[in-house]
Image (cartoon, rainbow, N blue to C red):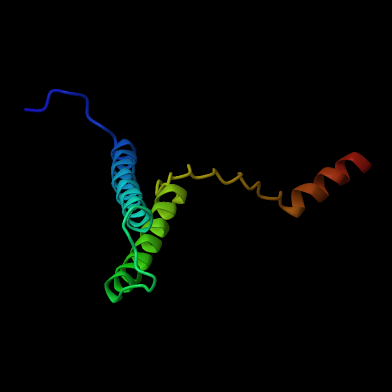
Length: 110
């Protein structure tokens, strides 16, 4: 079936973020150009029509939301949680029994 190289989970996540980010960026760019076109090239009456007011009222939160999502995707950290190898505990040396130390000191004194 699929004979190409298999992608790791990190590579797949990077490709997904790129695709989602690209589609959101194109959507936001399209919104900006439509708004600019409607302001610059369409003849406007001296007072704003109710339709235009509702249009801008609808577009503003959508553009703000898309900007927030794009910044979240671009600034988001990778969710890789690498397991740190367990640190070996140092070997605790048991103290010598006191009797052996006293006998050793007595041998040196005598």
